[in-house]
Image 1 (cartoon, rainbow, N blue to C red):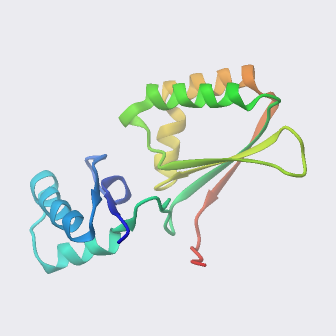
Image 2 (tube, rainbow, N blue to C red; image 1 turned 30 degrees about the vertical axis):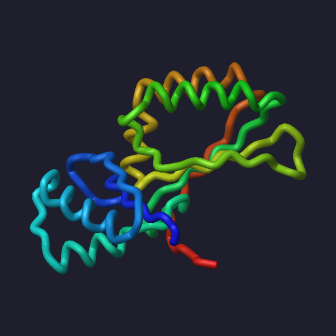
Image 3 (cartoon, one colour; image 1 turned 120 degrees about the horizontal axis):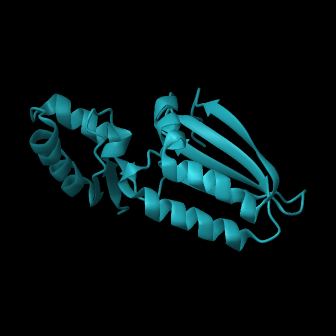
Length: 164
């Protein structure tokens, strides 16, 4: 049986809760309901549990839903290790304050030393909070140390999810 996960960051919330629960589906659902009641003030019942059940994901899945926001960043680097180190430092410094959900760095097979990073956010406003954070501003400045030329950015609203 596949492990299941529930991530509060994927749910609308004024608290910006970062709790993530992982385990067997029935365990996760029970813990998520308890958390929703105790931390978020919801009332336990069929409606809450149906909503939580719909938000369950198979562990390892990188969830994105319509209305989410993706930022696509293309950059050039001869040595990707410098970028990896800088991104790791950014992650450590941001900690719980990041609004990014996940990211992928892919090498362009047709253009040497060209990479595309895709970063997912719950929505555009969350991405802008992340971009305006001083740690992200410092990361953007320091990115010039490990890349060649200017990075290009594409700001994308998720319109539809196609499950294959």
